[in-house]
Figure (spheres, helix red, strand yellow):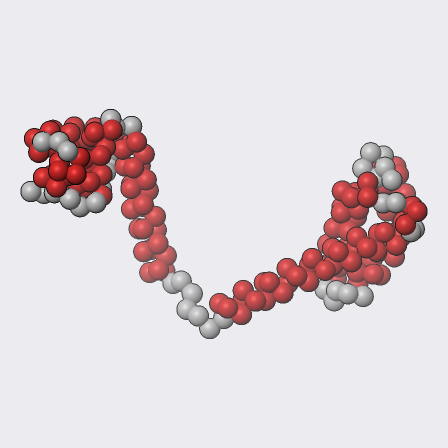
Amino acid sequence: MRLNEDPAAFEAFYRRHIDAVMRFVVRRVADPHLAADLTADVFLAALDSAHTYRPSRGSEIAWLYGVARNVVAAQHRRTAREAEVTGRVAGRRLMDADDLTRMEERIDAERQMRAALEAMRELPEGERAVLELVAVDQLTVAEAAAALGVRQVTARVRLHRARKALRQVASPPAVWMEERA
C-alpha cells in the first residue's frame, strides 16, 4: 500500500474503512471524544505502518483491525497507568503555596550553585582544587594544602585567586567565600 505517498489513495482507503473502524473503536470505548481521537489515531498509525501490509496475509480491513486493536490497547494501558498514579497520589497532601515558595527558593539557590560550579570549571586546576577542598569539602586551608601536597601559603594564594575569579563571573554561594582557619 502506498497510502503515505498518494493522498488520493489514502482518501479512498479512509472512506472505504472509516465506518468499520469507528464501529470497532466505539465497541471498546465509551467516551465519544476519545473514540473520535482513537479512530484518527488508527488512520495515522495505518499511514505510518502501511509498508507492513501484506495482501497475502489478509484483507485491508483485517490488517486495519489489527492496527486499531493495537491503538485501543495502548490507550487502555495509558488509562491504567494514569489510574495507578492517581491512586498513589490519592489521600496524600499535595503542595500548597508555602511548599511552592520553598521549591522556588531551592531552585534559585541551585541556580546560583550551578553558575558557580560552571565558573569553577574555568579556573586553573590548582585554584579549582583548593577551592573545592575548602568550599565544597569543608577542609581548612591547612588541610587542603596537606591534601594537595603544597605549602599552606600556596594554598591560600590559590584560594584567594579562585575566589576573586569567581566573584567576577558569578555570584558564588557565600559559604564559598568564607575564611576558615
